Structures are given as structure tokens and as C-alpha cells.
Image (cartoon, rainbow, N blue to C red; front, top):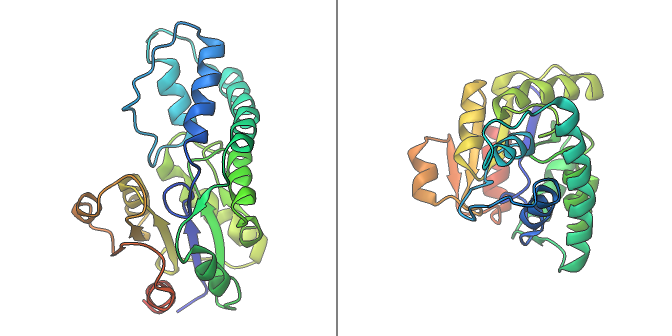
Length: 231
């Protein structure tokens, strides 16, 4: 068994940002398209911010021309609005056991931690900093790196190799997430997934997509460590 690489999703897995990202994104959309009508049932779960921005721009205007420049500008505006919204509300809710688990993994000499998240990089940093978790993550793959979440594992693994000087195999890599998109992203890359039912997807729905392991939360530290480090 080689060194383990554990890649964590953020929203619904590590913490809940109390609605700030959704509010910030809609404000940005309304600024650009004042007649924008938003379906509040649209799910952000497991999606990249890149994908969300594209879909919202096309929501009321399927012919809207989306360019790289438009996407990047909206990402910048979103980061600014997100910081404003997060200052208005209580800090993110960090889920039970998360800080303890990350601490235990971070001091294990055979484990490296990273992010695999749909958040743009600046948004990820804002949320982790507000939740006191930023210190655990020195790199990641983000929703500003690719539209398709399944493209992110290769990016994360290449960055990990450059940072740590270790070539991680897919067998020694785990993705930890709360949505079916986390599971499919892992399996599309032959990576194992630990699914956690702390997000917006029911346990039964997560189970239907066959993650290698499924837990209610990350509170049972020793059990989670055993899954990630010994399997």
C-alpha cells in the first residue's frame, strides 16, 4: 500500500455555508440579467461553479453567448459577493467530527489531504477560512479549473505529485463527498469514494449509486480513518 491521497468535497461534506453561495450567485446573475427568473429548486449539489454559471446564464436565454471572459468575470464577481454574504451571517456550520478527522489525517505520515470541489478556488478558500479548516489543505482541484467535475481528479492528482513528489495511484486515492456527482466523479476515474450523508442527498439515494463506503457523517473518527487508510 502506497501513500494515501484523500480529496475532500466542501459543501455538504465538510460544512454548510448557510445559503451564502446561492444568495451570492443569484445577486451576480440579477446584476447581469435584471429580468432573470430563478427556479429555487435548482440544485447546486455536486456541481462545479463553472457548470452552475453556464446553466444559470442559459436559464432564461438559451441563445446567450458564453465566452471564457464572461465566465471568469462572473467567477470574480461571485467571489466578491460571497465574501460579503458570509460576513452577514453566522460562520459556516462545520459538521460533527470534521476538524478531528482532518487533524488525524494531516499528521499521518502516509496520508496527504487535498480538495476536490465544485467551488471556484477563491470561494473554497473563503469557506474553509471562515470554518477554521483552511490550514488542512495546501492544494486542490476546483470548479474554476474545469466545467466537468469528472475532469478534476486528474488535475488534483497531478498537483499532488508536483507538491509532494509522490505519484499517487488511483487505488491509493479516495474522494470524500456528499452527492451522487462525487460518486460518479470518483468512479469515472477508477477512484474509490467514501460518501457521507450530511448534504442534500438522502442516504438511500447515495447508496443507490454504489459508493465503496457510505456513512451518516464523519463523526466516528476511528472508523473513517480505518476506511481511508487501511482499505
